[in-house]
Image 1 (tube, rainbow, N blue to C red):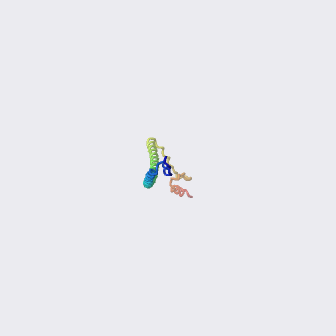
Image 2 (image 1 turned 90 degrees about the vertical axis):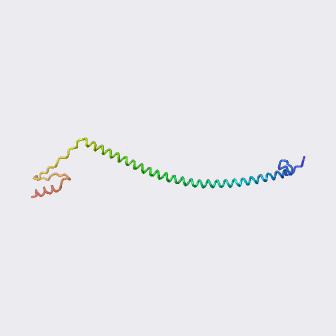
Image 3 (image 1 turned 120 degrees about the horizontal axis):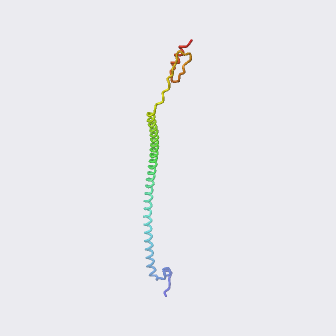
Amino acid sequence: MEALTPATTALGGCKDEDASVMQTFLESLFSTLRDDIAALKQELAADINDIRRNMGKLEQRVDSLEHTHDSHNKELEEHRHKIIGLRDKTADLNYQLEDLENSGRQERPPSPPAVYVDYNSREPPLLSPRRSRRRLHLWSFRFRG
């Protein structure tokens, strides 16, 4: 059996010539792997930068949509209040119309009797606040004495 050298024992009992071929092959393989890994890292870094850029754009778009959504909600709330106000006004007008229709069908209440003032009386007439103060004034001149 051949004597095992450190190179042959490291490569599973191969001879030195085979070991040097194997070592060259492995070095080229590792070199290729390092190059491929470096290229993949660069591609990955470029992809990550693209993703970050797109995320920034998406965040701006989301902010814009949220602002638009908020403004639309405010407008919607304003319109709801207007609609509620219009419904209330419509209901009031319907009640007034109904009252007018009902009052037109019923007899009107009799008007209050007219106040008769006896100007020859020594007592002042009972005048409502609506009556003219002039009548009371005229009465007071008539009975001074």
